[in-house]
Image (cartoon, rainbow, N blue to C red; front, side):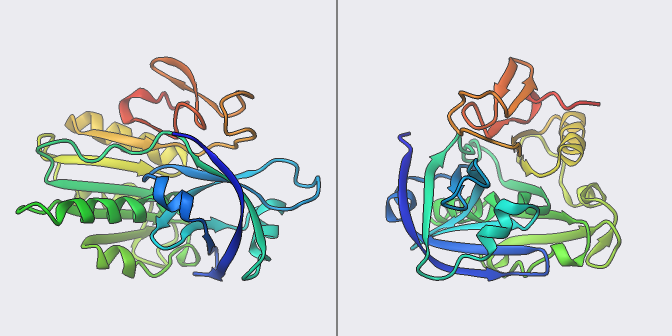
Length: 264
């Protein structure tokens, strides 16, 4: 898929909860092309600092393109200051997307940690749109883990798509106490009818991989890495897989769940 680089206008930039923001920009060309799991590479300032673009998963692409982000450094701090009408230098859509659920799948489980929840809203949009034309809909379950209640936002859009939403926080200030693996009991581990998608911190995705292997459930993982070029040239986002080293920006960010080798 051809990548588009252009200057777009910010439509809105709002705080969803104490930790997360949602930025919306007007990019009809990206809306037409982007698929669930892909990301956009944004230049957060016109100067030389920060020098590199920042990658953000597309969380929704209807009338406009929407991203979720957390302010964790100078790049995202500058992004949080963007106002309606401000120009935004964007490269995208980038990367390998999620596959749609295979034939015979009746239950999709999306497992996210922190800002890793971003690509699952557009994925649930796509699954819901596809399932409108089927007599038997696909059940969707979102298991979400955050550090504290400050990392939990209103999941009404997921629920509007028919998702069952279950939340866990490390300190128990929202949902169940503990990490997201505390919610694995919500999964029906039938390998014939269940498919897993996951995105988030590596320890969390490693736990998902162990669960999926134990029950022989197929799945895909969207990896999070620092990306400088988004072209597969600098190799800075390389990860270990069963097929050797692969770049997250070019070969991914989506990989078969069993393909990734997580460091112990």
